[in-house]
Amino acid sequence: MIAIVDYGMGNLRSVEKGFLRVGVNSVVTSSQEIINTAKAVVLPGVGAFKDCMKNLTDLALTEAIVRSIEKGKPFLGICLGLQLLFSESEEFGRCKGLDVFRGGVVRFQEDGLKIPHMGWNSIQIVKDNPLLKDIPDNAYFYFVHSYYVLPDDRDIISTVTDYGSAFTSMVWKDNVFATQFHPEKSQELGLKLLRNFGVFAGVI
Image (cartoon, rainbow, N blue to C red; front, top):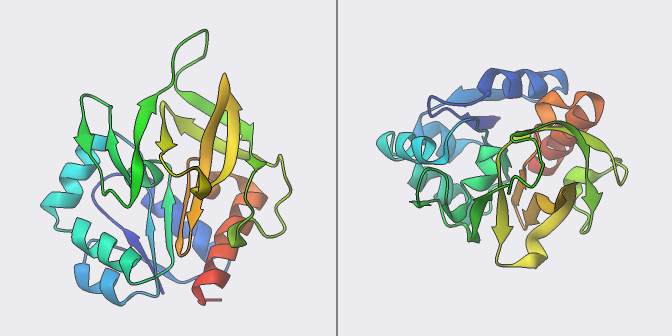
């Protein structure tokens, strides 16, 4: 069973439905106990970084998330769930993140770009990972975001996407995967990525 972390924000039901469509059992939960006992953890996210961190802290979920990662449990962050893994964000003033990965979250510079970056865009694979099995290079996924991550460790970058310039659209290190795009909104290839996560987590 996969625990989808519920902190009062985000596209939780669409993620749950995505996993259901590929035959993966999941539960939307804000219970530390369920997160601790689940085979894998998913942290989706839509909204402001600071509000999300406040909700996670108020619900005493930050420790459960970080502990799960440190124990080697398969973990998937989606959109804001990717950004929260980093040290801090500049969104609405500096705010500390979960600090699983060193680095920051910064806003796209205008320079003629439409902000937020919304719609379909391609990913270029720079470091293959198990969740990209049977997903071709330059495949299209769905994005909705105004901020992106700048990892200190470039080795964790798995895919990049061009929007004015190349930004990190997926990271991977050991048991931790995270995407800036929304697999649950990305039709067939997005479902394939969710299924690959289920396989990696041993729930399929």
